[in-house]
Image 1 (cartoon, rainbow, N blue to C red):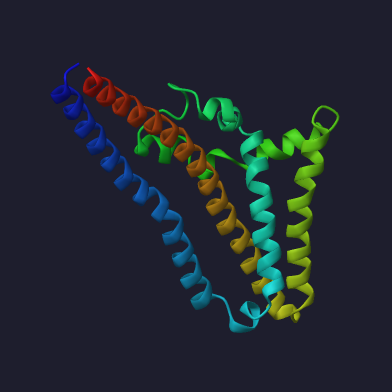
Image 2: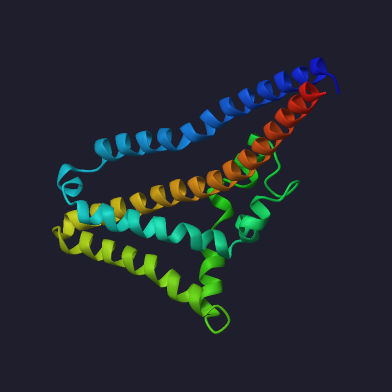
Length: 207
């Protein structure tokens, strides 16, 4: 390969990386949009006295963050998140960003049904059952706190707000975990591609 061809390949690689970066900005920006939207809705629809109790939201969000890995692990796509498969090329993460959003990052793919079914079989999956108990306990504590900190006519609104907050944070956590796997996969591939092109340029110059 002469120097001109090597330079052309380098330019093409840079262009592809640039396009990938634009998509990355979009994918990374989605969680921030979700957080901004959720915060706006929370402030407008949830009463101030409920928002003034941070314990409820912290427990609900904490439960969501802990639950997300378990939901992924119990799903039929859980194996895709293992490091060996994340780095596999070609592999389950070698797909376009549209397919990523619909086939990997869709929160509906990681439901509680599979997680609870796996936990019920605690003799076969004891550590999973113990782990899943954590977010469930946190969510129960959040609901109990919402029920006890307000009068009966306000408690119902507080409980609904708590559950909505937990669902919102669970969706965000699932997306972030999927995005992390997708990013690691593609960053690994493009790092190798750039290194290969640079090596080819170096060899052409050496000759």
